[in-house]
Image (tube, rainbow, N blue to C red; front, side, top):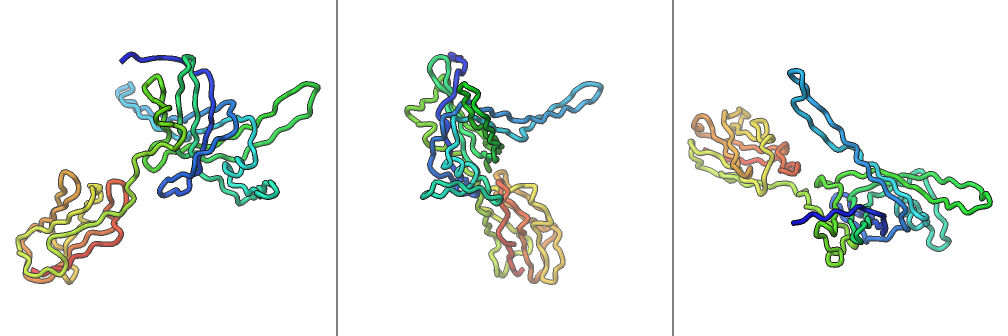
Length: 293
């Protein structure tokens, strides 16, 4: 594939959508912002270098704050209410700014035009804008346009994505996918608590003294949370039973193997809420199994 290079020459069609649910990261309808003059997105990258043997042996980088700043022809009160959480009276058209107002998270999208007539399209997933300064000066016998600038910070969504972009030179076809008509989807993060079943079942009797106990989770769990403090067997009087733990290759099955055969009596198998799924969601409650050998 031949790479086509064409410099960007301008910007147009700034759009936005208000995040309506922070947990689900759902958005309202896409709205068109006032004509945009310029926009700047400047991620701050923190770079650390490890030195040993009088030389650099390792380096690592991470993205920190992502400042966003743009300038538009104007900021109508309807847009200020959306951007900054202010109250707009739909009857009188009067905007009220209160110290308790809270800016919502927005998705911001825009189109960057290119020298060859094609475009690059950008969405920022999670931007919070801040109150802007208004500066006006007297006319000095000539026309001087006074345009508002507004800034804020972009952050990553729950999936870690902070920007999605497409370029017609790289195969994006906006006429087909309408890139700026909807906020692009990001792979959803699993926010549902894991569930677990076991062998033996709760209230089981006649369990073999030499048998293992097996916990099966409905989704992958974090192996680091699978510790003797989080999964254990004890006798009915609270005495801990020495056992080893083994987790399957897919991190969904945990085998509890008692080091010695169990004596006849009542036992309790426990999986605690410190166990977390791969996406970091803990068991909703302690999982407790009572059984008798």
